[in-house]
Length: 395
Image 1: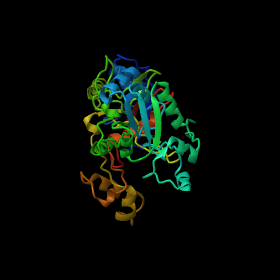
Image 2: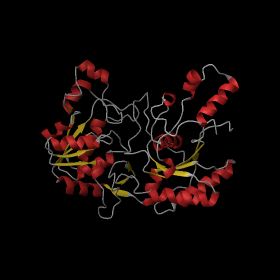
Image 3: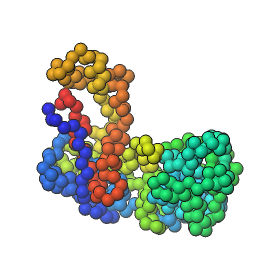
Image 4: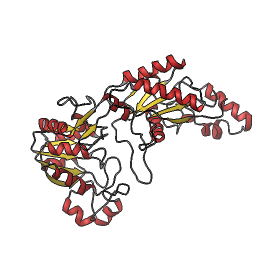
């Protein structure tokens, strides 16, 4: 039995540019890393590639002007309600620039006390002190300032209410900002709405349409086709995008199942090992201190090989040790647990012995591990190799 379980390694790669053969670059980098560091590749290892370099290799970019043209064509170019955006210079600000350039007036409606992924505009304690009910009360920008003054983001130091308002006006549009959590509120200002929430977008669209909105588009409905030769994402639109330059945005990668299968084939040809491959974006985890939920992409993994489908099917070792085999210890306990693992059912759903084993999608779990491994800064490891993830102590 191996004495080490799951290992996650960041793999350094050359800088990937538009048009590069990313599949070959990934395969070469993984094999070179294994040779340089003296570790072996095994069947059921996982090679994960960050979505950012996949989109870059695809050349999946769009300009602010392309976004503006799409917004104007779909929303009419007059007053547009923009509701529930996340507070992010990287994720949303450049989208807002394009939206503002495609309208005469933007009514920006922000969630409070925090946005969908946990960036706070004001604390719950301050709401309680002011007697404000975030489920029903609508705050104008002036009322927000009167009650709570200036609130800087604890990590970025940005006052997002001011930042977004200034950004809209700099693009030539009039700006009005309100804070509310009921999507129907925006219909008091305009019937043309862009809802920018990520994981609740389908519900928000349904509520707005039922309440009488005339035109409702999510971020996932913008840039779903090329505008004047731009990049696009037919499934997710602007969701999952990131700022590339002051005038361009990098979209979430387009269909990339062919890519992961190509990498898998190349690895099999070069190593003789059947290795799983996935593309990953944001991990699905929450920072307990900053209260920020990391998942600002529409999905953790937009593409993966078939061996990564499904959820874990694991027994909880501490349950077995404390219950089924409470009278055993030492080597006898170890053998009993190994035998229980070998004899476990193919589907443990509902079993008490599997409680607490995190029954989430494998791609969400592994993608979160990869996101934490690669980071988002200057590590230079856009590829992650995960080994031993599918092992258990009975193997």
